[in-house]
Length: 296
Image (cartoon, rainbow, N blue to C red; front, side, top):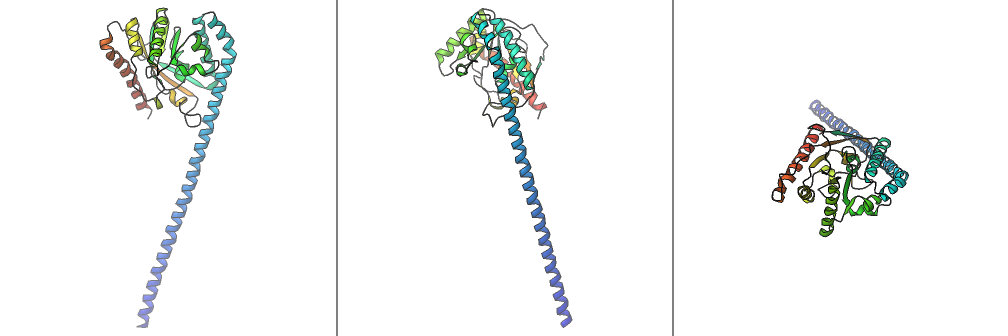
């Protein structure tokens, strides 16, 4: 009887030690996983910090290059604007844009899916608006002298506002009368044979998501019987994103831009203006969809 009790005790003791060992094993596994998670979290945090520092450094460098070149070129811009040498101003803007790209590591890659063409002048360039880089890169595909329509807030930027005082067209978006005046001014530039660059979304879209188009650009093209050249900024927002100096993207890299064939507006009128708008919007949206499908 005693032997049986002893055997039972040994049996229960062995089970107890097995449970203790199993508990220790589980505890060690949990402890290892906990430390691994801490290491991973630390690595992820460090990665985010390094990324943010790199973005801030590049943005600071971009701002320094942009402003320094503007200061150097400002006397030439001022002289040309004062003497109304507007085509020369546009040529100098091309030089300015080229130097900015050269010193900041930005490379615009422009694709013409239907082949290159003689850029029509006068014409209206209609492009989606994803970044301030949209304006910078436009001089590389708009071959003829062009006028920009932009928000009136740009008049508050020292030195840069000289363009909107003497040449380009500021638009106060919340004031219908001022917007009508701006498009009337754009019509005058078209009559002189210039191209006019318009972003029909009216503002920078978040992360390249296409926003609704306003009618102004299409109405003006129909009234003046000038062609519309559609352009698509595919990833400019990724290179220089709007939305806060420390929170948004900022990298050197390749900017992908697509320029479509000019759309003749002779067969359009105010009754089928929406058809013209949809044609341009569909082209831009399709190019955006194709790009994101390839770069998921």
